[in-house]
Length: 300
Image (cartoon, rainbow, N blue to C red; front, side):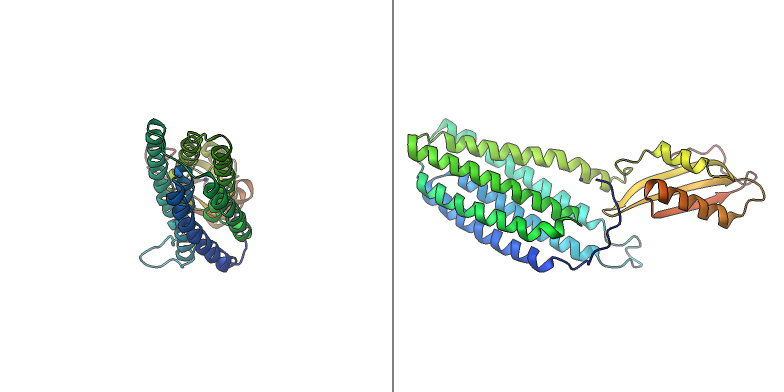
């Protein structure tokens, strides 16, 4: 899910617009489900479920965004920022379940076609297109500072394309009676949902698994620290994504004799901040006489 940099933005900016986006998406979902049941359109119900998942993802992202602002405490000493990664994991897992269900239903509908009312599909999908574009407009500003909200924004833009596809399916049913187009479009929507989830889940997993930040090589960070005057060796290095807007570094530094420990620590922190945008750095300084015995360079 990009390079992590600090963004100085109002944490409450856009909350009202996001809440409004949630409300209209839930209303749209209800309208699409009713339209799909009345018209017999599986693609319309598929689009409804996708919109519903987007509304739920917005709710989860909105709640996680609120929780993430809480300060660190004795229970959560790192703070609550990683709750957004947990929220993203829930959202994408739900999308996978929905995508698999829609694919199954589409295959069953191809095997046993059912009558479809094209004009209802076109009307409801057209309304959905307007709502998707409106929701994208409401979340656009907040999407610039939040990975969670940006994912929801991109979902809505993709939903707009999905609504166009459903409208095309309804039009083909009206003009030519091609009812098979409806489950075909459903398969396309399901494929998109599964593709999106498959590409985004690894990014979320990297945050939860404390992986190194994308775009930063651990070996480069180690080399940069070793290049600082006064550093003899570096070991027990940990480099990880702490939360959405912050990466962290932890390492043991073997300092040369008669080195000012405070000055060396400041020099290393300044160097990795400038070179790799690492704002949260913890360093344990050792001397050659009391250094770790046979240490691992990376990890413990």
